[in-house]
Length: 219
Image 1: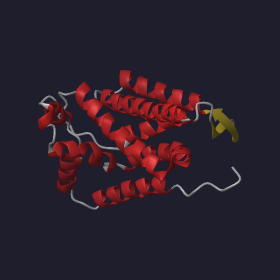
Image 2 (image 1 turned 45 degrees about the vertical axis):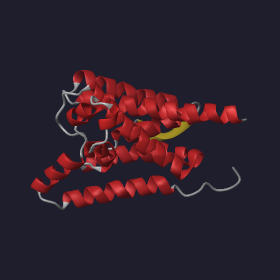
Image 3 (image 1 turned 180 degrees about the vertical axis):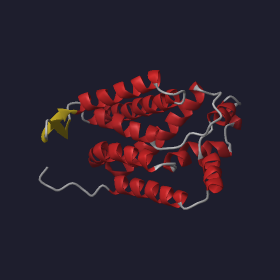
Image 4 (image 1 turned 30 degrees about the horizontal axis):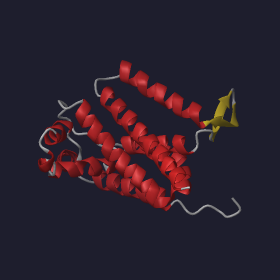
């Protein structure tokens, strides 16, 4: 494009909100931190019990946790890992869909990923926090928008770093393989992380493919 891309307002805003939440969380006592996780985290068992009721009874304060849990992180490593993927893939998605489109993919994809996890592991009473499902939705949206895209990486070659543009499909496929291996050989809660990532990725990909189909129908 001859015009410079618009600033990534949504990517920056989401990142700052998560950073502010973790900074505030880190200043609190362990007791208050646990209260925040219990109140703001998504409890699969609680949400699953709500969804098993008639549709007229679905409204419950527990429903709000499918969104609030996306912005709560208990460690810097968890947050930095999520933000790294958000910036690598989210900026390109925001340039194509705009700030509102990226925000919708992040929130809707992350919230629905939490719902799917609650349906898959309804017996889990441990709260789930973090933006992993939402970031996975952004990764899926990137693949739907740029199936032939390439990502610049610095690859270690001996004592030197060589810059190369690697197909995004290869990078995303490697990420998925690592998630699968972690699920099979990792701790019990790895299965929960796998379902969160898988559901978010599938939802993000579906959202972009559906938007493409609607755009073709309008034309």
